[in-house]
Length: 291
Length: 291
Image 1 (cartoon, rainbow over the protein chains, first blue to last red):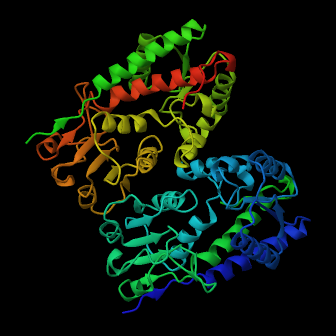
Image 2: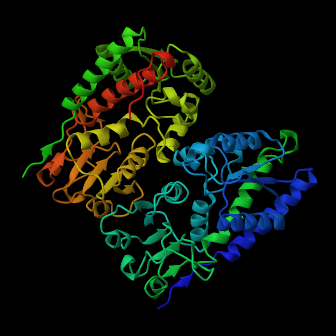
Image 3: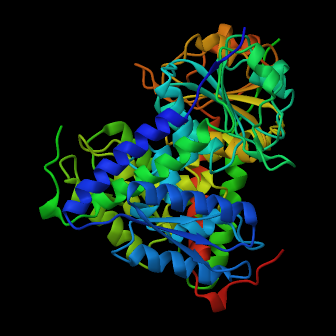
């Protein structure tokens, strides 16, 4: 048996198509959605990721600015930049890109992003609203995990989902999104005793740690659905996930890396930006609310 | 075998003693901690609970005002009251008491409580900061669960804790507090399939649903530690927890109801209020920070 491939590219393409259509509607009202990405690093992988976002944004008609503060940027400068962009009516989405200068905590700095423009759900207020079941932008990666599962018709209500990783970018917000869909959720991490025993209880397993090959065939139950959020660079310039490819022999379905959660994450960032732009139109020009 | 009793009254008394000492220090600086409880209900159980908080506050020297807006209070009026109290320098802690008038969501209204005065952790920003590992007041009940476990020397790091209930008052925040202490955490709820199979995997089990006797001997593993957060009124005016008393025959330890988590919750509310009062002293009069 080989696992079904829970690919993300087709879903990503259809999300981008919808984003492009909505951008076109906004253009008729004279609005061009604008995303600002704030970076403060010399990290080349980060720069490549930001170029990829900018290219994807351009492909659907979103303007994307990169505000590079350099690797020595002071915390106050970063926070002040996020506040200014949040106050700028021409900017609809604001992202603070990791990594950050030493000692800076993304969660702390992201409190300066207006939640209405926090398209990657980095402000602790966005996380709290998500946890409380109030409208908020979820981190795009966490939202992409759920979007891939739902796109492929994986049932979540009443099922036991095990999440490996407790970051504020994936593990914690995805746990809340899954609870909200009535899954029973277990969160594991580096201090979990007997990880394999715990993860192999998951009917659905979400691996979001950032360690190549962490999840082996011993970590899964036969028939499980596995979502691999890891994107670990290989020496030859490729990407591998957190899940050992041998897992495909025993599970029912598995997301590929690359081509699984990643492209959907980028597409959802664009979607969130379009949504933010739609919401900040002057009230008079909005389409009437339906439902 | 009968379970050890994880009582809360002694811990509550020692927390109140410490609160009283810190109130006395504040008095020397001319500060009297003040807690405002906003109610908007005719519910008698709620009124009794608020009287109990006021009495406990008085016993340690905290002034407690009850601002009763009545069961017909409009949402905007409740929010505006929370904002005014948050802006009042003489008020250090603000609580919005449940139940609320029809259609009002506590999480939404509590966004009007300044997080610095949000001593019962009701503002979604407090929940988000808690989830992100940033300083914040946790809901007192969630904090009490962890305090009772730690007081009785129950190890949490690396252990599997199962939480039954996903409310923003207990289930979700206690999950974050437990993750922060390196427990592996599973959250179950009304839609969990085969609740007993899931809960009986918990080395520690936290029941926070509000259904008398929900947790039976079938729901626990031998030797488990069980925290009963339920406070369900009985026809004769008493209180029972979510845990069937027969569970005491098979587990290692169990919190009593009443006398377990409840008194610690009240004591922690007072503690949070004292902490809030200490933090808002003028900087010049603060003791130097240590560590």
